[in-house]
Image (cartoon, rainbow over all chains, first blue to last red; front, side, top):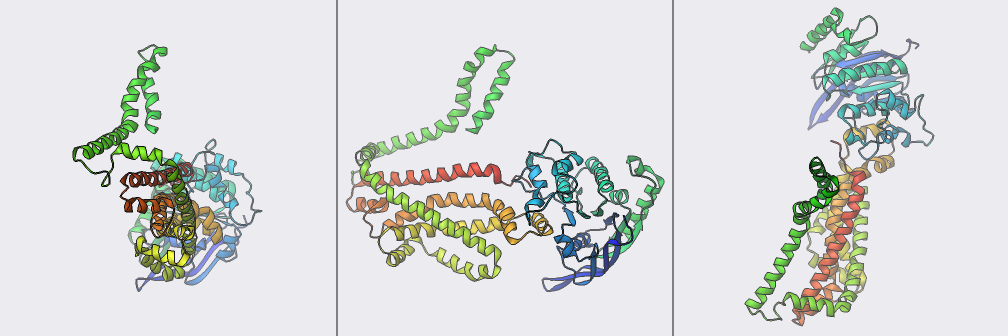
Length: 257
Length: 286
């Protein structure tokens, strides 16, 4: 953990495209930095460019202006070096592959010398609480389990940046809280940099070291709020006065977006 | 078939608490048979029998002449007596249909693959394929006979053409209908176009392909028969024409039955293959 060089740095980044002859601004003048091993959550109304921002980091969308630096390289270089893991809203598992084969999919793509990181696929499945389900097919799992498989898949090659696009959005609250703790455990163990998009104020405050609030039409960075909570998070964190105050503050910022 | 597999354990379970175990299976079998096997297999068979009896009565009752329509027993006798002639003519038709099926569907898969990778080629050539497809088979057949002569080739060509278009449309749709997030995942993994195709698009398209192949199985037989109508000396199609011109209704009906059996057989083979593959490729997610 150097803490000096930012893992993700955006400088005046904008995305615009034309849809039906009209110019649409998806993101305007976004500037921010995420330190290495940091955890930043992205919060905002729909259409504020949260997903767009994540896809710029992953080199799925090319920005129309500004400068993006990922681990000191371009986003394309970071992607090709397998330094980026992406967890999608829908688990996006391949239904014809077993759970273990889905986790190992990154090894099947590209050069044949691709190898697992510190943890094997089996160990990662155990880490997300799915030991013994290796030979199941995705349709045999619940929504929460599928999302955990996709997290294991994203972690397989030990990416230095983990991007998560509302991964727990479709889950019930109890499952979501439990997976939040699983995620924090993984984050502490792997020391990866996490960028996490959510709709939930509570989730954003609970997970992040800082919360980026975005405003819509045009999508832009409204404010970056540092999270100052003592000690590791647990279920009692949600009852701390500081936590409740933070949620109130985030809500007020969102109301002005 | 599936029904009785699921029904059997249920029957066992419900009788298991009261009745002594050794007697249970015998006591159950008739109820399962009446409730499950009978509607599943017996009802369609009964329907066929009723149809044949009605046919038989209609011929007798209305005094229909044998050269207009034969009675079912006469058709059955012809099927048996002329079995060698029928088989001799069934064989080339089957060969034409199978070759046409392989050729037409193979080309459709290749073209669909090209179209998915090149919008330009799709925009340029899809309209002309729609146009050619709109020409009726009976109109395309003479053109191919002129082009390809009088052997197996024009029949195979016609069978291939009738298979081609439905498979092209289905296969192209299947290759396009990939989960957009899975496509983004492939991009994040820096997958090449070839990898996206083999790892993602092709498996996604398998169920679409099979629904097209099932249609193609029957239409390829139709194509081969239509091809044989035009100046052919052999095959089910030629036999149909011959029998019609000779007012030999018994042979005509027997030939038509042979053609249908070929069609149904071909369809069943594809459906069996589909069931084997579907276990792996059906998109159960979502």
